[in-house]
Image 1 (cartoon, helix red, strand yellow):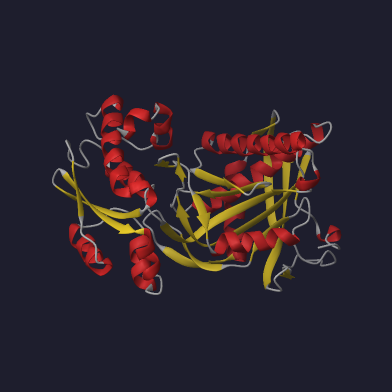
Image 2 (cartoon, rainbow, N blue to C red):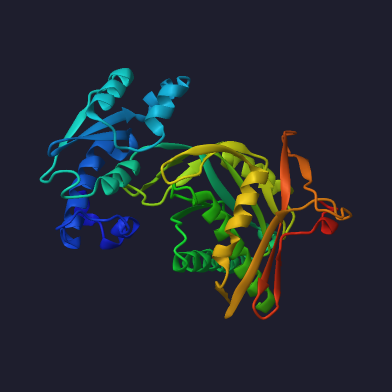
Length: 386
């Protein structure tokens, strides 16, 4: 059995999901393996994508689609969005309708427990998500790139990647201590990371920007103390847009961590080409963004997003950085250095493919309780090369 080869550490990715009343941790683990092993059989080493599930008494109903069949329906945007976006849990009727459209049979898993009683529906949906593809249209993604990475020795490259990883983990830990809801994922670019927040509540994208600020603050403190080339100089980009999320196979199982590909990652990759060491760029976006825990959305652009971030900066007060408390955080989009009243300047950059896009330059000033300052990003006076 596949489950016999798994280690308990595999469960770490799902430890935050609540268990139904009366279900012990041990029993929840056993039930999780039952569901996961059944899904593995239908996944068939990645030949199939499991896109939706529904419950029918003690049974799980599944929409299992060969991976090539999804591409055949790619032009039918409404159908693809309905199947790939949102919750993996649907009704039996809607699942049957989707199966008819894709011309596949509904698959059934007979369970020794009832969904919602032996295992939470949220956890079952998370398990199903590992075996399929998801489409997200309004998620923020940050890209951290180590400047001059290719010129470093292999040992220096490893050291700087580890330094960046520590800054990410440290910043995440500080947000968790402040009860700021972030469940981040990251995928490597070779010389850096894409990072995004898998939470989908109203504060998810803002929480990711908070994470970005703390990562850069930790990195700056480390660079001030470092000797040699142990701590990276970073180029940082942030954007909001659409992408597909999927799980690659690790051995004979899909990974517990995910990867992204789509418009938002493409835009970030093009932006980072022009980004200067020490600079923070944010893309020019206008997209419906979740603004309430009930899922309500409103159209939000880059300027209104940063305004919203500014209003929430108070959450970072008293966070401890290098044994010193944050007193205040001031994040803003820069304008002309000569303006008496700060105006916002939009930049137009052209990539190696001769494609143009608009971006904004971001500056973050963090004041510590000991009167020290952590200036993040580049001021307009240092943007001559950009």
